[in-house]
Length: 284
Image (cartoon, rainbow, N blue to C red; front, side, top):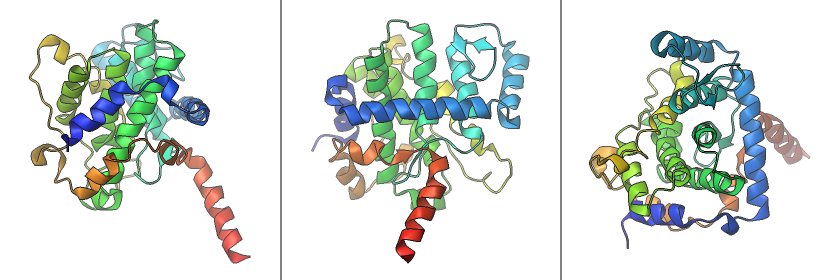
């Protein structure tokens, strides 16, 4: 069997828009609308305002090409991704992949939108395929790590797994080669975080977890082009990403089951009424 990382990166790099069903494309567009909605709402939260203030005080928030959603401000791609990644998660209503217990839109869309604003040649098909590839990678890793156990160990899948999907999304939009994408994912592995020590706090730093990897993803994809060290063993290296089991190999072996991924990544706001309806039906 090929190394796990190489197998999934090959699939992610080779994926074409034409490989996606109309249902998946439509679902991705709906998830983008959901992302924009929660980001606009989140822009008014204390968490988002704190990030805006930090960017303004530390970096002077110099005008840039990228939109900070829900505000009139514009900034650099990495700072816009940081701000939007925070805002999109700060009201805790962003999309949720249930099987992986991971928020994917706040990660992939924050990166993809910022890159699209500095690279006008990125078209709709490239944008959608890059986001779907990122969703696929992060969701597969989150499921393979067994989310309940991952939480018990003190980690948040949105950060630990999201950083890899963000690297894939960015690498695709930057038109990196497969080897460069592989290196980007390896470098991103050194940036994954996600400690849950903060979780009992209210409001806690959890709203920032999806944001930091979004900002940092503008470094890994460009690093291989600049001669950074070649790191390629992220998902097999015990020191980098825990001890992965046979479940991970099983999960990655079925990477073409698209509907089982995106159809279960739904806006969190809809979870409660859906659960209520299921409960009522079980009582009839």
